[in-house]
Figure (cartoon, rainbow, N blue to C red):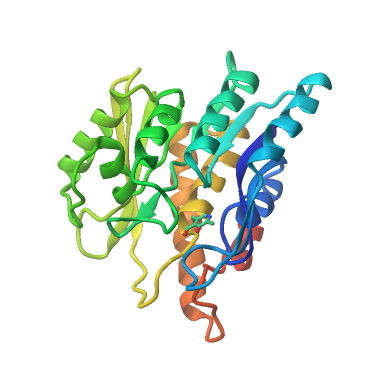
Length: 273
Ligand code: PXL
């Protein structure tokens, strides 16, 4: 069984981060080990939230892992609560990554052209350093612009998105996948560029119209992609599965009259994994 370690927060309410990664990765038949970065009452899109920062705990945990000789097939990072935590993620990658291991970085920073509440302006430059060590990064469009140090634009053409993915790999990551790309009305998906093979890949599902934000959908996407890659799927096949699963979860969410506004109902389609 493949063993994945994921470093991200636990939001007690609000379907994102570890509360999404754990069930998805387990459902895909992989062991999900966790390195929690912070405990939040709710994710940061709520108007009120409190946060207990676990920075001091991180090295204490990894020290024991090293003493015990524990290793992982995949290191998967998500929401990191501060610049310092990004540095600790780089250390995690050095200590537990390397030959034959996969470093999957979801550079969680923002959406709709804005950084999430609580991040310093210098956060993207730290995240850029973590991304430079990764095999694969999966920013949304906002995060891709942040990583490239460019001003956000809501709409990009398919060829512009591909060109952005190429430039993202020039900073070091082998594969860049930009999520949330809409090449035409009614479609939503991803573009990918692989610097080593020089190949690009695009995949789109039918866009499900919603009048509410899709909090945590990036975490759902990333967790499925990680689980699939760890299970031996090719990168393109893993990305296809992740797009289809996320689209199916959004479709179910829209149908649910009692839906919560703070996350998508991935639970209803978990059995498909
Ligand atoms: O879904 C990304 C995410 C993860 N963790 C926390 C967040 C967010 C997005 O808002 O606030 C705490």
